[in-house]
Length: 231
Image (cartoon, rainbow, N blue to C red; front, side, top):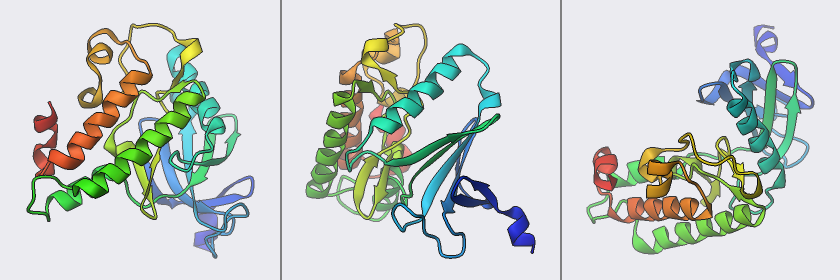
């Protein structure tokens, strides 16, 4: 039938082009499963997220290097506060990253709660500190693997059953393979001064960005003004 014609398969995973849940410059993210009718996969019995990257969009050596770094870094992550990747597959034109599916992100939660609460922060202090502690635990794991994330921000903290999980390693680099300065990556309002002004990144840059997230959770009552407030 028509639904079957729309179903795409990569190895044991199925997804439909109509099931898109996210989009980047050269990538799309779909809700997927081992069996499209039951919504389960053989590893976890849960739906999965399938990130499809069109490698034809990578025109420069830096873009190719960043994709290699992303794949390498994701395969190393095993801590519960970092998004888990089950498998990475490659074809002639695409890279497929199959990982756990989260429902929402911290940025969206801040926006949602910021419109409902009457106190100063979007998220209450005890809840914010709990989230912050778990973000730091995830960062500790990332840094222990020699990886610098370089794009820590609330939108890249996915939430799965209330557990924050650091995601999107598209700008990651390895501390022992630093290429030096020369180009900015990440999101400006979360950048440390040395990253923003000199394109210099380190583990401390990630910690700075985590601090901005804590500020965002505690101090932003109106998310429409969040960027101006943090700036």
